[in-house]
Length: 187
Image 1 (cartoon, rainbow, N blue to C red):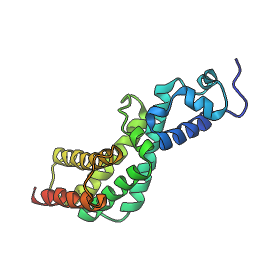
Image 2 (cartoon, helix red, strand yellow):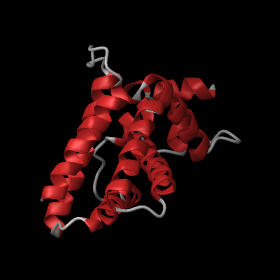
Image 3 (cartoon, one colour):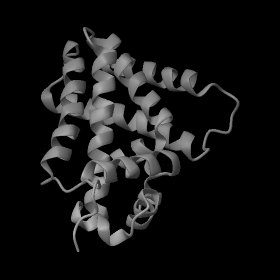
């Protein structure tokens, strides 16, 4: 079977990204992508090696997009100011693109170079922003994990409707970010 004219991996990824962003990562199936493109599912295999590869591409794309956004928000900043900009940009991305954010949380095969590079770039950026703190390399990695957990916890609970009290979500997030940063300052 010859490939459909005009169909390529980028078009397939774009369709999958739209589905993920509007309906969530679980809605991305080969069938849903094929339907969106007006083709039959087997045609996709000329350009992608299955659903796992497509979801890894979504994860990589989302991480790269998140990284670009955070770099722009943190340019010229470090320390507390840089971490605040990092966290705010990160949480805003999660709220604005919940399906892509969800896709970025996929633990891809660490042998996937593109995914690994995108993931490591975010970690290195966070470590760089933490350089004003007196942290060992291991402590900086612990701090990155803590910061990511804080951000991810808020994003996930919000998406699941887990915040029932009538408080502004971002005010609550920033309060907890302040507690986290105060703890780093005492470390």
